[in-house]
Amino acid sequence: MKATVENIISILENAGISADLKTIQGDTKLSKDAGIDSLEIMSVFLGIEEKYGIRIPDQDVDQLETINDIIRYLEDLAHKTDCMDH
Amino acid sequence: MIGIESIGTYIPAGRIDNRQRMAQFDVDEAFLLEKTGVLRNAIKAAEEDTSDLCCKAFYDVQRKTSVQPEQVECVVVCTQNPDRLGLPHTSAIVHAKLGLSDTCAVFDVSLGCSGFVYGLSVIQAFMQANAFRKGILFTADPYSKIVDANDKNTSLLFGDGATATLISDTPVWMSGKFLFGSRGTESSSIQIEKESGRLSMNGRAVFSFSATAVPRNIEAMLAANNLVTKDIDLFVLHQGSRYIVDTIRKKLGIEERKVPFMAADYGNTVSSSIPLILSDPQHKACKTVVISGFGVGLSWASTVLFEVDKGK
Image (tube, rainbow over all chains, first blue to last red; front, side):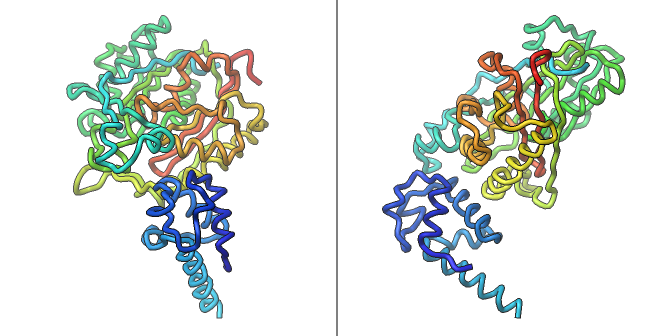
């Protein structure tokens, strides 16, 4: 479940967010700094769930403020899955 | 041959202007216009109850047709906000207020935003089974009874309204095959909280469900009717919010003009949202129309309506 900044930007693009994608970096706070509103955020996380075939609980979504947070979260999830498989 | 002959509507005159609440909820006008899509919420008068909304919608369908109370053989009221606490059933109260005949069958159906589509299937099947010629499907779910005015998730969305759909043997619209769905495991996503008695909604759960289950359901329903999206003149989707309607439209790859959002001046009227759009004269030229309801339950349903003599 290796994700890159480009992967997540692509999901933001597909979600049709109104914010300017060029201003969004890995450490940009998606809601507070980029101005992605509460409804668009739902669409972004649905896009992530669909792309990576996972379910992200509401309490985890609240902690994922930046693209880097999301990438780390996906890596942790992959690590946990690997551990369970072995 | 049973189908929809005419639709009467009633939207209360009262309004809550959401532009005056933007600071309270930390939103701007663009959010109201482009995301919720609701600028004003219709609100019933304090003395109006659910049955009164139904009666006023019936008077509208009477103005549009020649239907008389004594001709009505059955009534179905779709609501989850009935008069009193639901006992007696609201349809019985409507029966009394409209002076319907002793031989008229009446019952309620408890469903939210999918209610019109389910209700249409229920009343048509009931009428066909009993050889009835005229029946009325009411939708009336005044959420102003249960919405917490300080809850951003729901307070900016819901409005009051009612419809009365005359189902008869001289229809203008006939329905095709229906396709239904339920996901009770997520029923708490939209519910009345035990302690407060107020509505709560997990917006993210409802959005994810709507954006995934609904397009799949519509595509499967079209396939069951041997249709594809380009055969359809109009898609009447439940008006949950402008954003969810736009999201489903994009997932289905349909052009914007075929998927109206018309709730800006009255809000999400739950099971009334679909018939309110169907009744609008501007859609008179549409011959093949998809209707899709989804929400509380979680529950969803869709079908296709064919204009009589001109549809496929």
